[in-house]
Length: 623
Image (tube, rainbow, N blue to C red; front, side, top):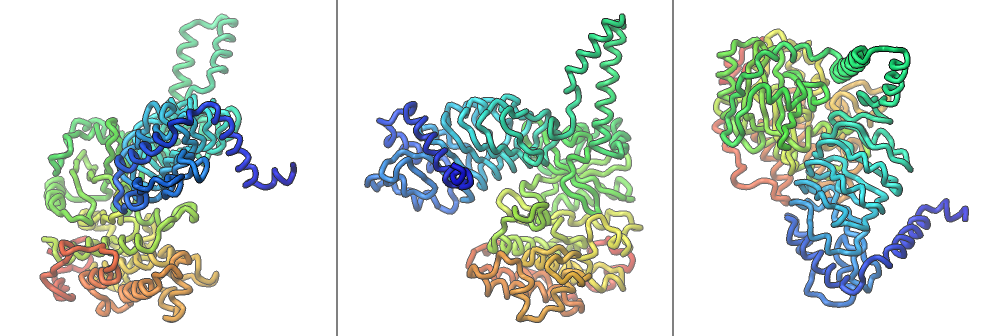
């Protein structure tokens, strides 16, 4: 018996066998084959399958015994019986809503649809659709809305994973009654309120991380959760002859103090600046997109919880970016532009110019708002966050970026920056390129943010010291010549972009190289420069990339990145050339089309004569 307990595989098989025995008396068998065929057909028809995984492998014309059991992602009770036990369709790029037709798989005990692009809500009657589900995984999708209370009726649930979606509202407390639950995760959602207390298992605090405002046993105390103590206070007060009024006042003061404590925990500075603009809530937000509903500053404040620190999803030298969550389930991003000394008229003029700068690889600017000295910019929400967060996650083991995806991101980002340099009118030098200003949409298409904002910053903030004391380590992206000239140039952008390319292929941070010797104290670019060509691939490249049939592409990519970060600016390629070189490396993936071809109206440095860039006015784009 002891040996069985030490062997998790044996235990797992025994558990599944017991479940099958338990369920066999409760599930009709006669129509299992027919309904399961209908089930899988319904799934294939209801989901968008851009890579044709299901269309190519689910062949219903085959009528041989147990043919369903040979379908990709399908596991049967028995190999020769078409009764589906588990469906695992993970990381296939599937789109659409939850496939309701799955209820026709009447024997199903396991469903894994994780790491896809599914959206919409989880069905409210989920226990009717999956009455015998034991493992249920919808993580890493785009599901929104609330967690259905009906999940508490899925009494066989052993594993429930809903993390990395866009779920809102409270976690149903009834889920705590699931006495078989072993794994429960809702990290990286937009949930709030108290968490369930699971009666038979302790779910760790990490399972609730990165939500809007959850509280409870393993987390921060919930305001008003100590109701038993309140009853004791009231009883004692009554016994002591304290008046009803004093009790009410005491409870009121308690909740007031809890609210103050919570606000201080959310924002140590008390959101003082946000309080100063509350009298301007009726100010309209100027919107460039007709498809975006009209809104006021009050809408932005409500959607960001009065610009709470908990809603910050990124921070750069131009200011923090907040996630704005609207009641109808819509998401936007709001940037608070810091240290802008421009008059309102000048700011509005700049915004009207930037509002017309549109490209598939730029984050769409939807609108702006001016409230006293504060300036806010409204952007389209990017579901997959920043490239920096994807390359350097808190838990390194969750980084899941294969080489084709990294190359796709590099080509798209290069396309956007080359368009700013060579086709945008007026032409723009970004000046703040980093992996933190490259955002990823739901299809991991890269979008540049913060373009055109440099000239709106406080001129005092243009000195090199702002890089040294920057908010997120800009120093690793700064071109060497900037230290001498304090002048922003296109070749400076090329250098910064080269650092991003090095991040993509090495997985290292710009100013902290974990793979370098302990005695090394330089930047990522300096580390790369000191390695010989024959050592680059085996020493510098992310260990997960070589040996998978991409080594030639990795070598070519490294050469482009190294060319971008040479110390002599004149030896660096233009962004047009960088985009062409990267496009050639990724030609077999068809990441680019004829519509993506950038036709520069100029080449080389002559497009940006030095006399147009005034020294010490490095925030200015070239007209």
